[in-house]
Length: 163
Image (cartoon, rainbow, N blue to C red):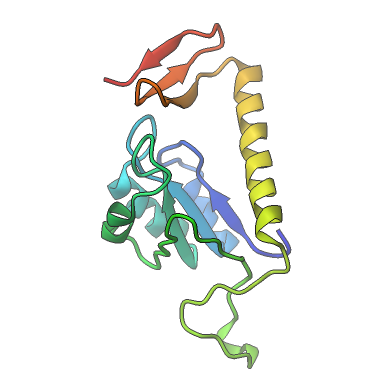
């Protein structure tokens, strides 16, 4: 996205392919971490070491909640970036040390995209991933707001709830 290299794990765990990501010189890694059908915070931290992104963001920490600040702050990962619920960020490649330009520590630089454009792009990527899983007949992890429980939805419409 405008030269910014981002890896978004989706609902996964550690994969063999992550070893090749370090060569990509990623700017951001966005990793899930609730441990329900995907990696937990400890495994997500291990993945950050393998991936080697300049900034690491953890999401999906507690099923049914948009964000859990306490868990995000406690996450033991290098170069972590905690983005509180309701805040927006604008992404830009981190400045090389020899660029001659000044940076302000952990600031995130604007890449020219609005928050709406970033949100749209992210939502579209998620929709495409779900459509791909449906086409392949794979289960999709979802959350039941009434039951307050995570579940897998299978191609035939059946559900398997997490205990």
